[in-house]
Amino acid sequence: MKLWDKGFSTDKKIDHFTVGNDRELDLLLAKYDVIASKAHAKMLGKIGLITAQEADNLVKELTEIAKTIEKGTFTIEDSFEDMHSKIEYILTEKLGDTGKKIHTARSRNDQVLVAMHLYLKDELSEIKTDVKTLFSLLLNLADKYKSVLLPGYTHLQIAMPSSFGLWFSAYAESLIDDLYFVNAAYKIADQNPLGSAAGYGSSFPIDRDFTTKEMEFTTQKFNVVAAQMSRGKVEKAAAFGISNVSATLSKMAMDICLYMSQNFNFISFPEELTTGSSIMPHKKNPDVFELIRGKCNKLQSIPNQLLLITNNLPSGYHRDLQLVKEVIIPAIQDIKSSIEILTFSLKEIRVNENILDDPKYDYLFSVDTLNELVLSGMPFRDAYKKMGVEINEGTFSPKKDIKHTHDGSLGNLCLNEIRSKMKKIE
Image 1: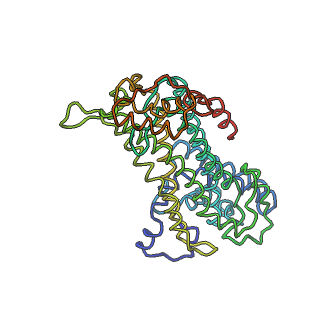
Image 2: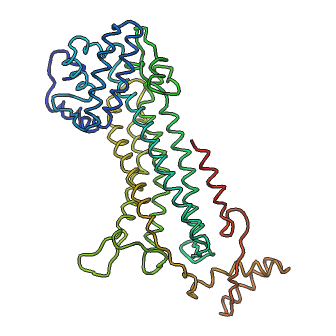
Image 3: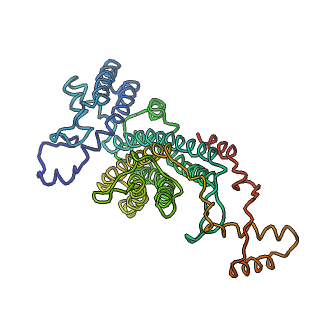
């Protein structure tokens, strides 16, 4: 069944190529098509295009379909093009001519648009919740290990003293920036496009304000052409949010892979969180973190993929836009699973508390030792040269009782201030 069926069949190869994996992806969106269809049916009844009884019957049957979706028993067989055609088929089978009226004053185009907007609102909200859970864990770990020092690096060379408090809370605060992008995407998704039909509105006297409130959108996408043009754009906005979270996760996963190696030996995890080698019995591999790194690097390409699909399209609908679903939906599943597994694993992290006892890290303290000379009255440039000479001659004696007190330093992590920043993100 096709919503655009005019009584003739298309070639099976054309069907297969144009439908693609829409049926599989639509199983995730069907819940939202039902939500939108219920709002649409109520609106049709409100303005008199269908009777109040017909509207009630449609809502009742749509509620039953929603139950099958929740149970996981809803299917989209090959005889149906997508979720829209299957849902309308069920309504027609149950209600006869009343079921055929559900498509009045809308197009498959604004159906998929509103379903995507509703889906993204839910998924972006879940991503925010998951990120905040990871954020809280990172700040708790920062507080727990705030006094444990570790080497800081620039150019992968030993640089200055850092701490696990700095390390954990750095990633926590970075997640706040990421959620600014996620929130921006949510705001774009939180606009009702239903009623734009094929992109040019309808001659029916529909009530878009009613459906906006019914589906709990903050506002409408008022201009019907602008609503149509949000297809691809709203997915791209979500992709930028996902990409930013991915960048933070990928960088942390890379740190973890380095810090777990025997050459660093800064952290470890229980054996049940690592994998082994088929021939090397000593191996404890960071496969989980390597996969987080790889998946999140891949996710950072998603905005560019969507850009390439949509970049040179004129206004109006084009079938190219179907392809954005197969990019954004798997991306959302991947970022959620990556956040979940990183949070799960970090709960079991084990920190080496005596890293800087090794004399190879003595040069970490050269800057602090230099600063002591400056505080005693020596000009900075002279103190710098003095330290350089001592290091070259092997006479350098590090000052290890360091005191960093400014905001955001290892002696003043500002964890409460960072928490306050996150609390301001709704």
